[in-house]
Image (cartoon, rainbow, N blue to C red):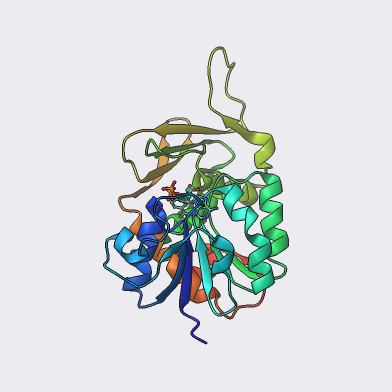
Length: 267
Ligand code: NAD
């Protein structure tokens, strides 16, 4: 059994193509790939679609057929697609790496329940830099929270379908956990009209969408007479793809559980 065998759901997507490239450069073995039923990419070679040359892996429209105990499956697609395949992954005992964002609370609960039966790495962002940023932002909030207002600003390309980004929400969660606030209570998603003065304990989220921005995140701590800004800018999706493949290698052979990228990186 080769534990570096990898299957990719959504192999024709922006991240899917990057993942195929990253699997190749990590010397893992792409053993299966899928696309949504009806996609024109079905039947094509996953390597050719990703621009790395023929790999002998035809893209299937049957994502369920990807799952097997001898491989890790990486899924960067859409919440409804990811959730619809959890049962098959459990039945096959296939570890999962989930990068899809935009789940609601019920969706997140379904992933947590699945992780009692199979190992799952679930992260809103697989870049090493962003995962370090979660840690640093939490530490800054611990020191500054009394007299600094906290705002989170994110920017992404025009094709992104969810807002604020999973990473922005992840930063919000890391910060609120560190300072004992409840994100659902304190989050303010966008402002318009006569909003009144800012309430002290709120955390504001601002979203920018445009062009081909891969992903920028800033946590702003604004006090009297000074402000601190912690910023991460991704310039290539390859950073997420490499992190996801690293997570896939790490998670194979682990016991069932819900793991974060922080666990993978030992942060
Ligand atoms: P995309 O639209 O380019 O790609 C998604 C692909 O999934 C499409 O090709 C689509 O056809 C395919 N798909 C949909 N349903 C499917 C199904 N049932 N079976 C197989 N394939 C299916 O989107 P993208 O930019 O690649 O982003 C995908 C997801 O990854 C989004 O949720 C995005 O927010 C997230 N993302 C996460 C990270 C991270 O580090 N966690 C980084 C970038 C993007």
